[in-house]
Image 1 (tube, rainbow, N blue to C red):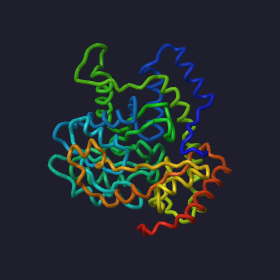
Image 2: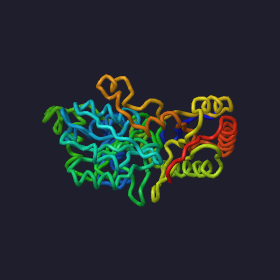
Image 3: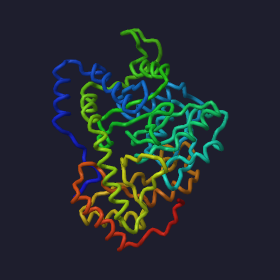
Image 4: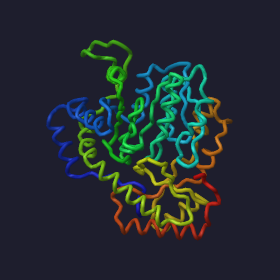
Length: 367
């Protein structure tokens, strides 16, 4: 079976982890600071703040902007639930808007209508490895005096022109094992705002600048040096990993038939955390691929506003037609960099044969 993901660990990761273990400095030490500096430089901003997960990165960024009880944050229902639950953690509420049918990212044309006197921030999600329309979002935020928190959990190294994901407002990355690079588990906030970075570091470590002197209510959102050691090795490999993902995606773009392949907005550099197609009879399609030895994944089968915690909060009756349609049609196929050319051939043959059997998706996607 060709899996939907295959995390890669080599001698470099093992050597750095072992040296961290031997150093005796295991939590929030020199390796974490090095990863913060190197990942910030890779992204193109002066500040990186490492966290224990992508979810705590989102939570911490919201806290850093002072978002809390009674506030609203505009985001999308077509995402992993952590985008929205991180808002709830602060006491604020998400205000959902639908996504663009081509990019699967937030539709900027819908954002201003969702702004209310309670709105404090916009949280676009750069889904599957393509940056959301951050210039448009940043312009809206500037007009209305709102913070921008980019959920960049899937877009390590993605860009619009020369500007990378994570350089508008605060960028929140995940280093979960299946991401384009991993630390085993962990996250990172990137920002050009030095004052924000200082607040984030204070809140990350129990509100403490001087040991055992706590200036504010804080949290334990720290990364360990063990995780950072994995990340340092992975960061060196990330450009090559991304190029391999892009090469596989180019092959799929050229050779897949009977499915809707990913749209890449002009000027965008997509890094294909997932290669997500739209298909007819999605669940049957996934079953047929499995029978042919090809794994797949559905990201995401249930939109956030239909998840039980949000139904309980009164979101269940909201309607987002594009999100609802996508959750019935999307299917991600293997695009991880460890795929061999022979495995890519098998995936192409399996997708095309399945599309021939089950029919083509009768949907016109805007271009």
